[in-house]
Length: 154
Image (tube, rainbow, N blue to C red; front, side, top):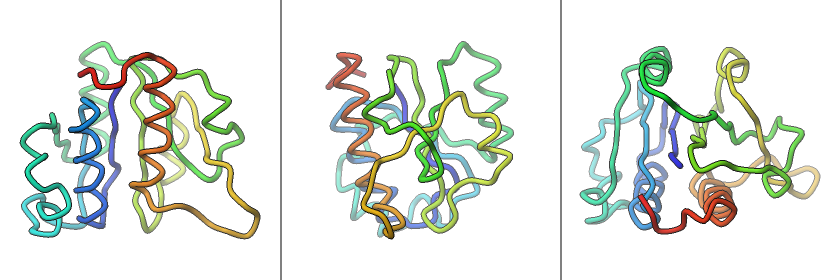
């Protein structure tokens, strides 16, 4: 199981997600360009001293990320999006899935939607747009790890 952050633009959220990944033993792909420098003090403050305990792989672009996946065996790409039909609780996750989270400000472009193997959503009350990305990551990653028996493993 992996997390992938598509062009993250809020360092505090990225730091929180990296801390989550460290605690749960999950690697993170950061797909650039990010909206901040990865040495940003807000990222470091949110991640605390956990950043040294997470595998972070940086990619200059989505094309570079996809090229890396093509070069090595990789599981499915599962996009977390409010535009999905399938609720994350109704989805059967696999141990080698990568959960992709879009930009906080804009999600992902249609070209990225088009290459996903699956898309899942978090059911919410009508009229509300979305959850904080770090909260969404925790909810869906927790369910994916529960289903696959991967909690706490790297």
